[in-house]
Image (cartoon, rainbow, N blue to C red):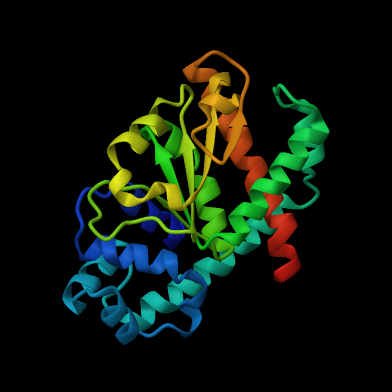
Length: 254
């Protein structure tokens, strides 16, 4: 059975309504490393949800109605996930992985870009992923690991009335053509995306040119908008980012 965080993200990433279940999940992700000392009363108050709705959602996650049982399971699963990550990343080197990947830059340039992007991830409070359904689903392992390390990583939901962007946010746009980001900037300017630091992961070389720049950073992957090829490239990029972040920041702070 999936760890609790994976079950929470299955619901959260596919949510369609701004309800107590959604608010409960976003609160847990935002306060993930505080859960060890978290109380039920604090969640109910700060998330603005009812105990009845929280108990109902917790039961649907496979836990009992009792807060004590959910809290205990949550912490056990957190440490289980950390053990899994440590085991999977033992001996991995991003430099070896970069050598075998398809790219338009040198190995050294790609490693520098990955290190810089992880620095940006570290300095921002929230990472918001924006894109179509399938590219976003490829990022779930990255999302799960980064949350486990204490970073608030969420997918963008258009229905959330509380959502607005600040200097504490990093927006990651996943779009082979770049159209998803252009459309977002055109139609959701009310959310102040210009305040956030932005990264566009794309195959479109146009957005590398200064006159067509729409993001602070661009990670350009080779190819001409090939959906299948782009998806495989995304898997590799998100693996590299989570491994690089783990080695660059989490191990030093653990």
